Image 1 (cartoon, rainbow, N blue to C red):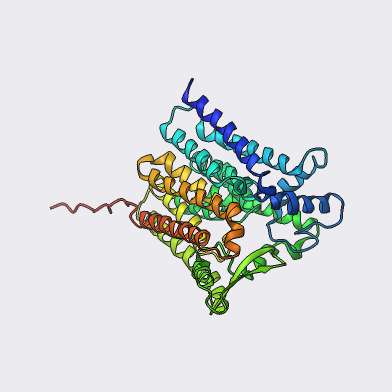
Image 2: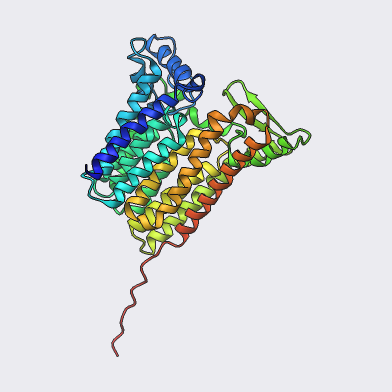
Length: 403
């Protein structure tokens, strides 16, 4: 049996297991899909409300596409199951682009990494909107050089579902020589989305998701919240885990937390701009796409995670796309960070859903596992930033003056 056949068999088995994980433990990993997404779909399909059009919403406009597509089959088929099958179909399409004919060692290793990462993160990686954006980001990244219009369009669509693929799109604008194609395709997709929302009467809510994110507190899983979680475990006065009833999430309280909340959005913006500027300087000095794009994309994606005051477990799926591209282009250099990412994803599945209740009541062992996950995230972020800083550039061409 060929290596290509084995990896496709593994694809089917891994996705079957992960769908099953969405139904265990009282559907903990798939609660958002089975409750929130299904409710949003029902509201829209029955004319009750159209989040993002008739009211502000926490997601960009195209997030409705997978939610409504899944809702069309409900109640004939379980909403959560249809979602899992939809994600599997999207993954299969991008997986076919990645594996191809199965002759490239780097692509096969990247495919095995993707499957290992999917299994390591489990149900929460599949049963969130982020799962829809991952295959779009993988295929879009792989096509940025050969088919820049198509690659950019896929990344733009993914960005209008969840914002994070904008990091990979920015890396493409910086690293790909055909920047006009990248910018043109992304602009065209964005113009279509904006026009559709305006025609539907939702202009006032088009960017509602931006304000929602900037006003949020420190989510307990975010790396920046690690200090406050340790204070809470130590029973420090004022340090605690609290529930935000509006956002349906758990956040931290503690000394100076309001100042940290206020600082995190500027820190995120400055950090992302600094990384982008570093990439731009590398391009100006002659860095190639193959050398620059993987560390720049990975650094921007990890910056979105590490410097963010929101740290939902599904964010870890974002690591897959830049690491897949890194493995395709340079297995020798990228297999170690890819292996570390799988460990991070496995710890994340432990954090949610399996240890989450224990973390909420501040049981020390489980909180320390969350701390370990966050420390490893920071380690991976530092690694890719150092890798970005060390990207080789072409030496300047010196003019020869005849003697």
